[in-house]
Image (tube, rainbow, N blue to C red; front, side):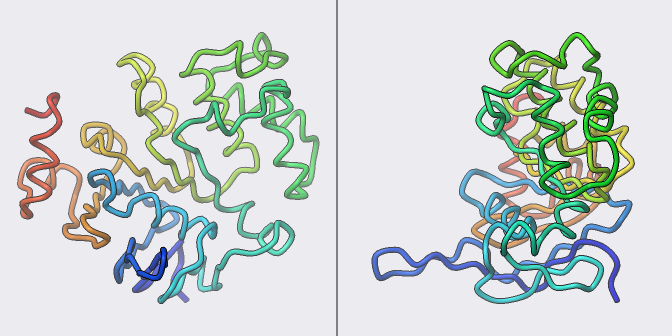
Length: 249
């Protein structure tokens, strides 16, 4: 049995108006229990679709997704409780995923109830918020009363509250100013869980990840160490990606 979150030879095709488009084409990814993997590529390369496949939000056309050897596919909340307790998600735009009517504490505690996690949910939620630097002053606030960086930390706390083994983050520092970007990366770097970060920001990936996978046109075109990809890219699309980021010029 292979330990970790693994997709093998996964293909995802979208059928639109009688034609088919392949968003992910024969991709294999393995996130070990201690892994720190960055998935990078330009817009439209297939990163988000692959992330949704790994999160059991999108069905595969071919291939398999497994967690510690157990096959994973989209299903009901009840059928996927075992999976959601172990694999959590930080969305790109937390403001759209946080209920504006709920307090910060309720936003973090609610998934614990839905997943049937044992223990005091409010205490667990409070501890998770403290871990990301949000103390008791923030517990009763609503998302509209927080900054972008604070909402991002709430989203991370919500994912961490049930103590997942794997955290999948979609552009977690996109659009943040440099100070907030560094704060979020510091929080992610200190996590005990394995992390897969989807990003177009190679400098953030190098800061957090030890391995990088580069996607283009639905395929993984290059894999290597974070520093190796940055300093000695082998594929022209990887070089284009690096050249397009001013901070790496």
